Length: 154
Image (cartoon, rainbow, N blue to C red):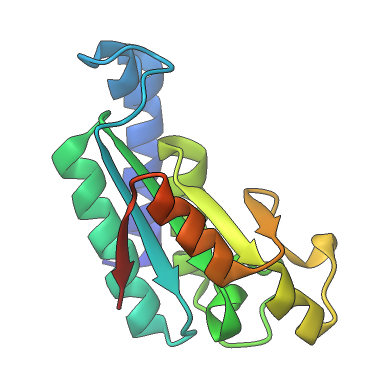
């Protein structure tokens, strides 16, 4: 599907959500309830196909569990370029927009590894606003697992 059609479908989805309310407004769970299903994805590669597979998997999980799921992505090493304001690796814009949309519209938590950023000499300004920064990406993965998140490494 070309980017124009994708953009039109995204806009239509936004209009429908505005007119009829989000799925969250009609969920069986209440705002503030902890999700029953929790998953954290490790993203440590910058190849577009790799990133696309992860984003497709996240889309499938969001579709399956709708409002009863918490999803996080921890990006480190080359994978951090997906969360960069100006990636130094060739990350297609459509993938960058998809991950931002997942964060903005579905609450997908984005985590950038501070150690990777330090090695690249990046500051906060180099990472998209939707992402938070954790000092150690591997430790963030452990923290998610300790909080009951299933760990997915591609």
